[in-house]
Image: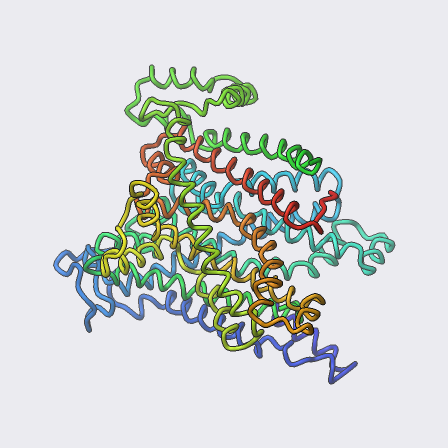
Amino acid sequence: MMGAGEVGGAATLVTVAPDRATPRRAHWFRQPALMSGLIIILVIVGLAIAAPLITSYNPIVQNLNDTLQGPSAHHLLGTDQLGRDTFTRLLYGARVDLRVGFIAVLFPFVLGTVLGSLAGYFGGWVELIVMRLVDVVVAFPFYVLLIALVFVLGPGEKSIYIAITIVGWVSYARLVRAEILVAKRQEYVLAAKSGGLSSLRIMGRHLLPNVISQAIIYAMSDIVQDILAIVTLGYFGLGIPPPTAEWGSMINDGQNFLTTHWELTTIPGLAVVVVGLGLSLIGDGLADLLRPGQS
Amino acid sequence: MSFVARRLLQLVPVAVGVTIIVFFMIHLIPGDPARTILGIHATPKAIAELHREWGLNRPLISQYWLFLDRLLHGNLGQSLIYGVSASSLILQRLPATLWLIVYATVLAIVISVPLAMLAASRRNGLRDQIVRAVPLFGLGMPPFWVGFLLIYAFAIHWRIFPVSGYGVGIGGHLVSMFLPSLTVAIALAPVVIRSLRASMLSVLGADYITTARSKGVPGRRLFIKHVLRNAVIPAITVLGINIGFLIGGTVIIENVFAIPGVGQLMIQSIFQRDFPVVQGVTLVFAVLVVLINLLTDVAYATLDPRVRFDR
């Protein structure tokens, strides 16, 4: 969506100044980082969606005759201690981890952006309350509060979303507030104000579109954080309950067989690293695209 | 010193907020907290007892006052499992955690400074490109997974370091805690490298570096005496900002390497459903973060005479 907006904006400028208004880097598809990141993520999402077509094994059903098999033609990456095909569990695990990661980022993104905008735009006691709340939340180490919250809420997807929202909104609030503080002194905002537009309209239609890019860039690294959090909660047995295939619990299950079957632990971790790489590349690419000259 | 006083004053609302969140954790439990905490086999008498002890029948605000009153007397509550105070359990385990935090910070600096220098010494050169790729991979590595890989390589395959444990005496700690600290350091390094490289590049662009260069100061001396000194101050702030991340990392890693620290206590207490200890640990960690942030702020103001806080 961002890319389409960029290109659309550039196209209208072409008529005014053909050469200088459309620098090459402004085309999203010419950003090598963005493109390679997108390809990585799209391939993984594609594999996850097409999982039943790619593999005929079931990710959950145990096959105790075939436990802890090495890689072979039948089992590309071998099997785990319950005889389940590792490659199959990896594919189905991508469904869970990516879905939860992408959904989990939405709530803190929206909450943080709204609170940050209100704080930055209105200032005064609104800002005071929001920023004191931020101070309180950042006083807790990320994982400590996350683990404690998921513990009291009980394991499961819903608890993960609630916990990540409570812990995660602060970064967006800080970021958006700082951006709004700068942007609200710009002339277009003053013009909108003197035009008698409502605060809501100024924030929603004029300020937000200009400040949201920072939050979107940050969201890319935040998804990585969230996926790591989900995987880590899975390691502590606080994440998605078994037997669902999930990368964190796969790493944890493999831990017991580290001496003999190190691949059981290594492979799901590598999957997380590749997803992280893809999202970081997208974030870097977006950063170059949306705020050129700052990288 | 009025800076320190003002900074301390700012801590008051944060401290109040932190205690409110820790207090409310119990009330996030679905249903009757006493019943959930004591389990399905709890007798009605035991449940009534816990209700009375925590004042669960009173209005929320007076429950909070009770909680705060105890806290101010240094009482974090009683462990439901061990029957001793949560604070004694935590104090007993604090040294291992502090060891891990300090050791990991030192290792993170040892890893990050040379890499950042390599990268900044020639911007956009090959070495810079390689170092800049480090965070792309590093940020996506689950810390506990890195721990397992290090255990496999250095404890199982090559048998250089022990698989787990805390060790005895300072020498023993240094050996036993090396892999866990390295794991935390690897998680922290990408962030530090990134900001250290950026601050070194900005120092390199400063006028006094040009002056030093034109005076003929040789490259290595220039880097150590002029660039590094000025670039390290922002790096301290970065470490301060990420202290929450660092401490969160120790919670995970203590469990991977079976280190008897506060983080291990937290996870054990979670499995034993020992709510008061989980609450106490959460609070202690928050206090630790706030204190370390205060120290870094003060250190920053003292180290860099250009910095004056006028907020």
